Amino acid sequence: MSIENTLDLIAGKTLETMGYEIVRVHLSGKVRPTLQVIIDKLDGSGISVEDCISVSHTLSAILDVEDPIDSSYQLEVSSPGEDRPLTKLAHYERFKGFPIKMETSLPLNGQRKFIGNIIDVIDQTVTITYVAPDQSIVTQAFDISMITKARLRPEESPKINNVSPNKRKIK
Image (cartoon, rainbow, N blue to C red):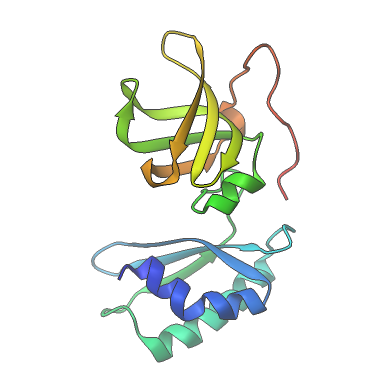
């Protein structure tokens, strides 16, 4: 089981009762690994430094007891930021209309990287509109299992049909 799944299993419910969700977990580094945990509030309000400290203390206590990582590591808790990663289907639903940059596991129409806007989310499918390399406008559905990386990308938002993408404030 991956560290992402393990952490969600051992700490997810506790963080939910505190009003947070785990957005992404990433373990990196070999000599002194860093366990990066990105959190967000369930109510959509912003993450403060105090939130990160509170979650860090809670996670440290849980990780000390459960001990899912064999070596010593550094815990880093942070907010998702404006270019937040999208790791769950609910994230795509929440940010419909927002600009996105994503990568797929397999090429589609000769490309694996896409910059566009989230149009819809139905079942396990995310639909985006993007400008193809030939400058045509493409609306494409992606099964969530095909998406390997995805982030909101406000600064890279293409104009499609001369209409600016949704400029809603990210909460």
